[in-house]
Every structure is written in C-alpha cells, then in structure tokens.
Image 1 (cartoon, rainbow, N blue to C red):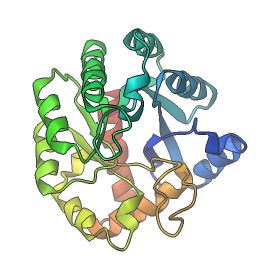
Image 2: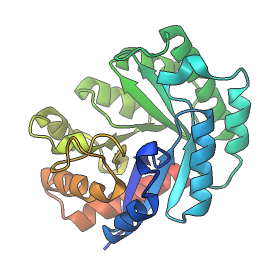
Image 3: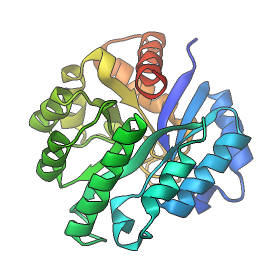
Image 4: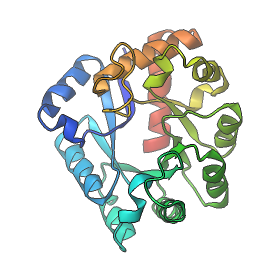
Length: 255
C-alpha cells in the first residue's frame, strides 16, 4: 500500500501541545508517511522547521498567512529566506488573500502576498496559496507574478471557473476534509475536472476535520477518510489514488 501524504497541516498549533507524539503515531498507524507542516507567521515558521528536523515524516513550509499580514516585521522576507535554507523546507506559504475575515487590511495582505511570491521565485520554491472570497484578486496577482515552480491552491473551495484559472497557471489543487460533508456536492462534482496529475489531498489540521469527526480537532491520521471519499467519487481504488497523490506531491515539492 502506498503511504498517504498530507500536504498541509499545522502541527505547531497549540492544540497539539500536549500530545503531538501520539498524533504522529496515529498518523503512522493510519498509513500517513509524509506530512507537510505549514507556517503562518515568522515565529510559527521557525517552529515548523524545528519540528521537521525532529520528526522524519514531517517536512516544512514557511510563510505568513494573510490574517497576520499587518503584524510582520520589516525584514520578514529575510527571516523566511534564512529558514528556507534548511533542506527540510519545501515551499513558501501559506500566503495569499482572505477577504472573508479581513483580519489584516487588504492592501497589506496584497503587499505581503506579493513579497512572498517574489521570495518563492527567487528561491525556486513552490507557493502554498490561501484564498477565501478573494479568487479574482488572488488570480490576478498570480498572473502578474513570476512563479518558476507554481504551487498549490490549498483547501480549494472555488467553482469551476476558479479551478480552470488555477490550472491554467500551472497550479495543483488540494482538497481537504469538507469534501466529505453532506452538502459539499459542488466540491465533489469538481473532482473530475481536476487532472489526475494535479490533485493533492490535505487535512489543514487541526481545522476542517472530515466526517465523522467534523467539529472536533482534526489530525493527519484522519486524511485516510478524505482519501476514501475522493477515491469513491472518482471511482478509483484507494491504492491507485494514494499512488497518484504521492507522485504529484513529489513532483511539486521535491521535483
């Protein structure tokens, strides 16, 4: 059986402070061989890099989430660049725009987003994109940017038009736990529009737990449930899907 890949989790969350070792053990028992641990600010990015050095199944991405764009230090790009020198760092992110919560002013979100895209281009690393109710502007900025390694639209929640636009830019599409929810018919219907070689799966743990754990703390072991639901929707064997997602992740993040 191919080992499962969780392409996006936040293991540095305080929700794992007391039992991270047990969380990782459950992930291994569930067949999860690789977890990409994603930073959301400067300090958190340092923490995810440290975790990636401690746990062999964990790799890292460093970045500044749009929610905290207003709180970055003047030299945050240098901080991220220094962290990215570590061989365990695979990507820049998560970065992007969030016009749903608007926790940082939109002009600052856009500035910090552009700065991280420039950083990713300079380092030749893919980007992990957060986008919530900001697809038009996110895609516009991506289309204006130099991205030699492209990246992934994490926890994709857009429609067919947004999906097509990301694919045309060369992006991979990552699907998370909401695909298992009863009302996610639209998201499940989009699965067949995603080319097999562009599909990734994630937990976004500790958030967005799949059924039957919805509303509880998510963890990487639960990604097996997402794989099972996606495999059923695509009429694939779980093994076939696992091998495809693993190959896609390797191509994007290690290629």
